Image 1 (cartoon, rainbow, N blue to C red):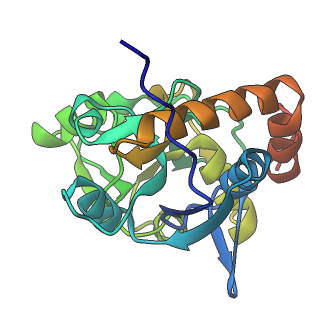
Image 2: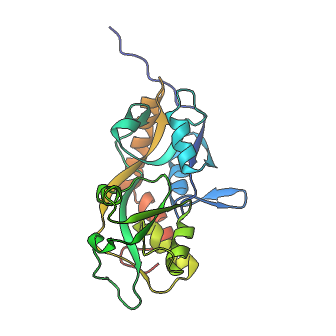
Image 3: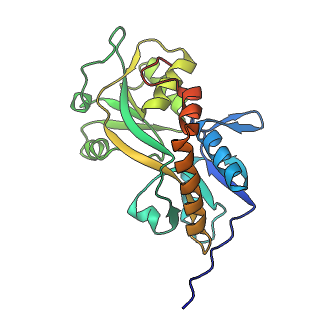
Length: 243
């Protein structure tokens, strides 16, 4: 039997994410950010005209899960068995992710705080985002309370105003947000609570395996030729450098 013919890549792709500085940001009518720049370059290498649109995370997840939803491409999604039933994942991650607690501790570069120290306290989290198992379990057992908000900016403002005791956030996003808001005395806790990779994903279709494979190929090339490192440095600085 002859092998099935490869599906042609689309000429145009519309891809969605929620506002998540510095990875996905809206500057007037223009969408920009670290992940946006990486995917814009990847799509260009594939000859695909890519458009980016913002959508609140919970709505985005709902649309992706619908059999006939309005979203065919999204990022940056962690891999879960449930999502894999209806989303096409590649093998090359878009970004590695680590989640840490941020606390108020003026003058201390690495505060001696553990998750267990949050007993009886309130942890700010971003609504709809995947929680580390230990954080979710502790909340379910009533050891601490989770306060959900829709943006990282709101979370860190609440932390500065003593309305929450800690914030759970992507480490790079948290450092970037603290810098942008010019908040003093808010620092990340080491080590990270969880590590996982995130990916560009596509609604499953006859063409989605070929599309995921094509992005894998160029993302791998971009890592090898230094393009992703260059884009990352432009937003986050070099490793160990203060933002």
